[in-house]
Image (cartoon, rainbow, N blue to C red; front, side):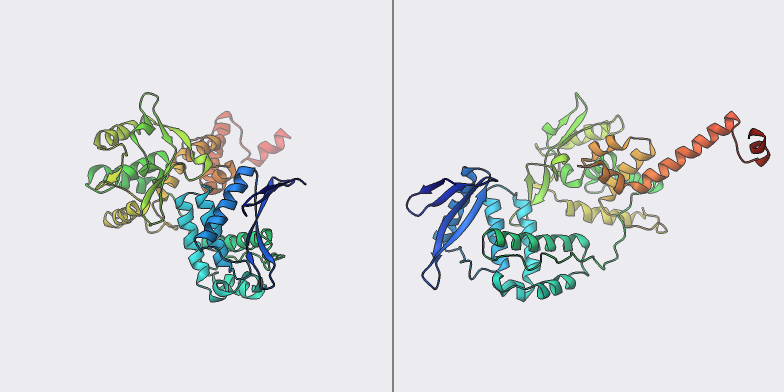
Length: 392
């Protein structure tokens, strides 16, 4: 296997079956042997960029020798590398750091070198997290697994101590986020169109298009094409390294980048939004971008102040319920699942079907009832047992 050596201690790069691998000397151990760090990539350029990042960390004093590195140290290095090499955005980095902070609350994981970590204490830590939401458990579990697997790749450890550790299930009872009923939606619509409330345009747009609030708050004038009556969804609001709202140059998911139609019902609303907007971004407050949490606070106040919700109906109502409400009305109107999938920006039709299975099931029952009426009008009915016997 041919190696490409680089001078002045810059490391060695060579081809592998899956791409390229690079090695660089990062120090000397207690026995005088050279300590090398390996990086991998699909191209020579990618490997060289990673080697450069390692060299810079050595120069700046942020590099930690493998024999002293902890899981949290390695996780930080991985996130910094991914951010510097543009594999992740600032918003993803910030959210990942929040997950890492959760792991760092465990003294054992935070302070123990990776080589000394064992199965039982990590399992105990994960079990202690079982009272949290399943989404948070998933994030913590995946970060632990990913970091330990990276330690194996870098030859810091031979194998991960939690290879066979199953992901805990949350013990937290969480009610499903539900859509608004037709009556609730009508009450909210009247409030948003007649009362002076903050962020009414965003709430109405979400309820009438199914767009996520982060996508709505990121809209610019150029994203609206009134000639072809479309809205281009291509970015979202997220939080940066300092916790402030920033624009991510892509939607929440790859399939989130989409073109959605402006219906005749929604067109007057969009015209009003364009008329009221004073900057390139359609929704700003005091010259600053608006976050989803800001809108959510006002949404909850509106629900309570104007007594929007039917308290007898089970399920949680949040800002995301506006998106669910739009999808439910589309299903009730007879929209095909594949069309709804595209409008909502789901990557898989199964997400659409699973998320709105109740609405689809009710829609099917209503259509079967109409079919029964149609058969009855034709004279086909099995309610009379005598007619069945005569037919046979």
